Image 1 (cartoon, rainbow, N blue to C red):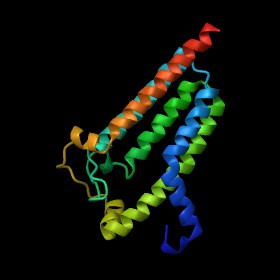
Image 2 (cartoon, rainbow, N blue to C red):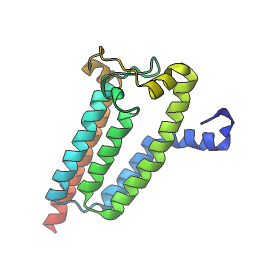
Image 3 (cartoon, one colour):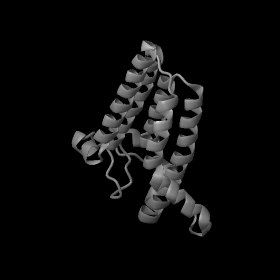
Image 4 (cartoon, helix red, strand yellow):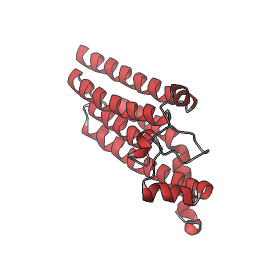
Length: 181
């Protein structure tokens, strides 16, 4: 995203900032439409748990806005938090047992994560300039930094863990409720 993108840049930044609120709104719709079963929930749980594991790993290496992180999953992928979020979304879509939910989740993730990535990369290039581009193009990594649970908590990843657990519990409740009637 260049400085002269004007209105497009503004829209991208708004969508990126509102992605959590939009996620809650989509979550209500997804829950209402979901038709989970024990089988879809188990399959979805496995995918979503893998996504959350990637997010926790990434958050345990990240020093937001202070450096270009080059350790942990950042050695392999530029945006592991968003990769993890995508897997969580896929897991919840699978768990819902509903193709319309899968379409809603896919659309939400495509729009909001694309905006978040573009906004974040513009920010990183503004703050870290050549260092960020060097990381993206040369693949220089930091193999010395170790995972830190304290860092993951400081990055508030426990909120995502709790949110995922709540979403899965609600879907399990709905699966039980659906079976009762």
